[in-house]
Image (cartoon, rainbow, N blue to C red; front, side):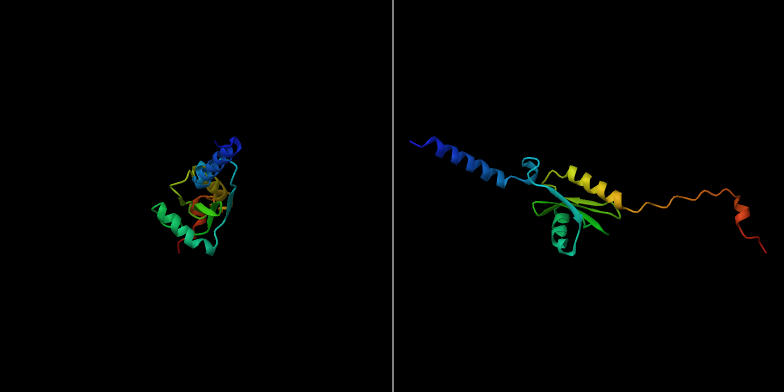
Length: 127
């Protein structure tokens, strides 16, 4: 007959093994922090892999990437807003965070100037 403590140990180790193999999105919230940072040259291989998984191209321009447990799960272009994400993970909230960060640093578009003069007054006189 097996000892109760031994059975508990086996049960706990099986649960931990299952947890370690579970996709990041199905793990307990708060276990792995999300890191949002600028993409570096070293990230190109992971970005190409991520784009291939998402059936898209790597977005152009400056990128923000989201990393969990050392794996890139999503990326967005600061310039264009284009996004790639791992389709096998729950990344909707991560993509939202990336887009918020990208909008915060994206340069604002120039607003049209309000002109109070008539157009004829602004044009040089015809010679």
